[in-house]
Image (cartoon, rainbow, N blue to C red; front, side, top):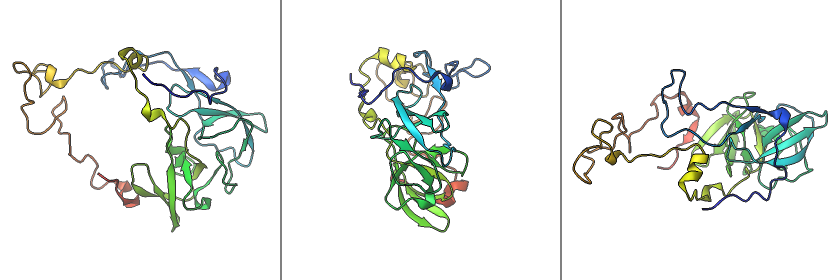
Length: 261
């Protein structure tokens, strides 16, 4: 069993004014029916209100603390602005306590600063990127994640995504400088079943161990072959090689190079 290096964290309790309780649904809908399997239980969590828009422009803020957030993989940072307001943002790697950040159309290229995409030089690594200007960051928000600026052309910024896809985004949107924190999270070994239950992950039963009524792979005497040429889900939908993206997806026009298969 392995964990994460929490030595970079500076505060154990969250800012009370930026938290609220969140009721768990265990993946049930308003009818009480399971909509996603294998969800349920887990440790009680307070939700931290993270500012993905960072629309407090031209007002500098000081990094007061770096904290753990149970609702996301990256760490978060508490920012105290000059006017006294406090906000949580996603903490990039090598963020320092006491350093200042600012969001503006054009700012110095220091870690944590947020500026317009068209003013970011080619080769820079960024995170929390806006697809639609003013909507808030939607791209590159998980632990250790970042996107590289490849080109600036015709009102669009070309971005190299972690999946190796290259796509265009409007250059009037905003993005933050740096690679996100907790880069070693992908190397975690859960180690025991109980730890999965703390995370709200319930056990998964192999399809071949089920009865024919429960899954296309079920039934047979002893260990039987799956009995079907193509892999299927519990509901008989084809998986494993079937393309699921719509042919006429509106975002196709913004994809310069698809990810490598």
